[in-house]
Length: 76
Image (cartoon, rainbow, N blue to C red):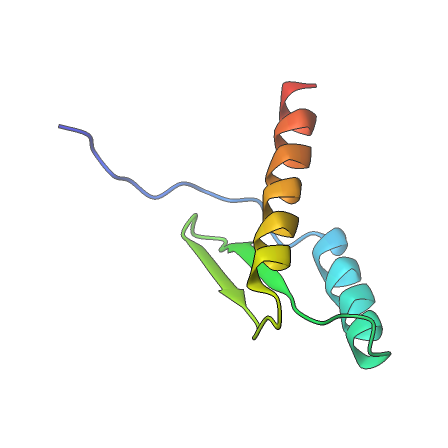
């Protein structure tokens, strides 16, 4: 049977704040129709959230593209 245990995550990085601030600026300028966000808490737990999406299929496609890009980065 698998054992679940907490992991030590890295402290908050400057890129987190910068990315959020840039996204907030874009949202305030009215450039987004929807938003999805995935978060890793410092205790290793995870969370996600998304806004109302006029076209949910487009938002899902955007998340799938992000998944692909992150996997490409991981595979190097």
